[in-house]
Length: 495
Image (tube, rainbow, N blue to C red; front, side, top):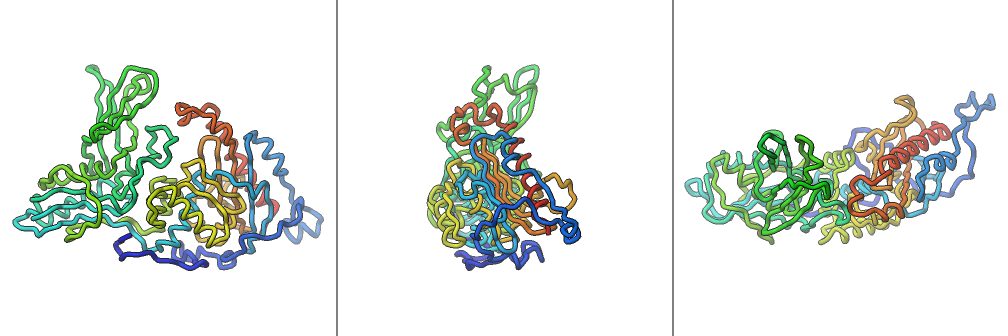
């Protein structure tokens, strides 16, 4: 796809290194470690230090089986911890079992995107004129041309409108078109999710505000006051293509309908209290972006007709453009905030596939060919519950690219800030919890932990999926187990 720095993809070899993510972050001894190694003999521990060894003192840690049984997660728990230098498997439990990774899949998406797109890659959104500008009027069509940027927001569209005004543009003789064909149009990432959750938006070549619209309500003496807008930090234009209506009922909480191009929501009054707000997904992202841009242009004195969608290649003169951050910065935000739309847009750009499932399959094939790791991904965010990878496979991929740690968040363990710390990517679905990453500060370790009670997950009805009974408690126990396992490894495998 086309980017600000030219077209095509930057193919990096099998043993690429993430130079520049953080200067000095890459530990050469970790790179290119074997993806598989003979399993060592089980042992209770290793000497904590030469002095301790001479005194006959050995570290102790709770047995992994005891910790897993105590967590009472049901289903299956698997993990693998590797030596960060050699890639040798230090300890495992069901490490070859294919498990749903949830958002831990984003770590593989980051590796895939860096290999396929390169660190300098950016998405660029352009405003294109198909004819000359005469007397402040475009003598042709004006096109809002998307590249799939998942970070595009209302303020950036406002800046594009201001750029047009600075060029003296006041209107257009032809049409106002939106072109979102840089990426395939996808109605939602996972159709099994509740309709109203903002983390399951549509994907297209024109994405705005993570493809969410801001819904705000307040109860007054004369009834409900409702607002739908595309707010940013500096602009908050009202939105016409999405509407909400409050209905006197207890359930369901939300209903959604798309009729004549308008997205209509109804909301149960019993759940709203006196006031509040939340972000709702939009299913027509290019129409959403076009309407918001039209409103922002009007505020600058630029009259545009209503937007219409167009496909194919849009040629003409670029009047204004805005670029996303460079790829590593987008990946850092994706891994630290687990933004699903960022993962999907970047993964689709990397694969060039025509559907999300085909794109996930392309990433799986790349992982096998590049790192010798078998996996089956149905998307790039991990939101779809049918993706599978083993703990050993996940850790084997991560051990080859230690620089990825610089993009991850600290994971709290029992060390409480003292000694080795974990940098990791978490993943959570209903009754699925994953964690994978790196431990530094002593002996470098690379690990992956997956827990999943898929039978319990599959029994959930649609109404139960947003907050199932017992779900938060299950997730807390899984997170506690993950911290306990990391503490165990730090104790048993010191520097």
